[in-house]
Amino acid sequence: MDNAALAEFLRARRALVRPKDVGLDAAGDARRRVPGLRREELALLAGVSADYYVRLEQGRGHRPSESVLDSLARVLRLDEELTKHLYALARPAPTATRTRERVSDTVQELLDAWTTTPATVTSRRMNVVGSNALACELAPCYMPGTNLLRAMFLDPGTRETHVDWNAAASDTVANFRARIGTEWDEPELTELIGELSLHSQEFRELWARHDVRTTTAGAKSFRHPELGVISLRFHAMPLEDGQVLTVLHARPGSRDEQSLALLATMTATRRRSR
Image (cartoon, rainbow, N blue to C red):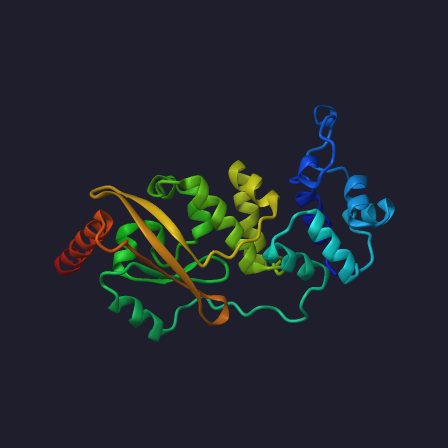
C-alpha cells in the first residue's frame, strides 16, 4: 500500500466535504479552522476509531479492509471512478501500465484519412503522439509532440483557444489522474508535475483536489482566429498501451458544421500550397 499517496488523497477529499453534505449541523462552520469535515467527524460517520483514521491520514495506517474503504468512500461522497482510485491506492496493482509514446502507422493512416474530422491520439502521459491536419488547424496544441497538460497551463495560446478554459483545465487534470492511476512516480511524470506545480497556481489548486475522471464524451468550444468560435462534440476511445483516440464532430446542420467544413477546405488548400 502506498501510505503517503493514500494519506494525501484522504486529506484532499475530506477537505471537499461540507458538514451539511453529510447531515451534520453546520451552525459552527464559521468557527472551523479547517475546510470540510474534521477527522473525528469523518471517522464517526465511517464507523472507525478516530485514532485509526488519523493514522491513515498520517501515512501510518495498516491496509484497510474493504468494508472500511467502502465506508470512507460513502462519507467522502466518492463516485464510482474515485472509489476505484481509492481502492487502487490501498491495493496497488503489482504490474505497471505500459506506456507507448508513438502512434502506430495504421492509426496515423486512419487519422490522415479523416480530412473533415479533427482527431488526435494522446498517450498515457497526455502527449499528443498523433493527429491529423484538421485538428492542428483547429487548435495548435494538437500538434504531435505537444503535452496537453503543459500546454493547457503554460501556453497562453492554448488558454485563448479554449472558450471555457476553466472547464477544459479541470477536465484535463482529472483525466490525467485517471490515466496515470497510482503510477505517477515515473521520472517523466514527476518532472512534469513538478514543473507545472512550480509555474502554475491554477494547476496546483486543481492537482490538490485529487479529482479523478475519465471523460469519454462531451463538448468543447474552440476560438479560431479566422472563423471565430466553433463548438464541437467529442468522443474519446481507448487504444492499446494507454493511448486514447479522440474524435471531434459538429452537430449536423449547425453553423458549427459549416465552419468545420470551411476549416477543412482551408486546411486542404494550405497543404496543397505548401
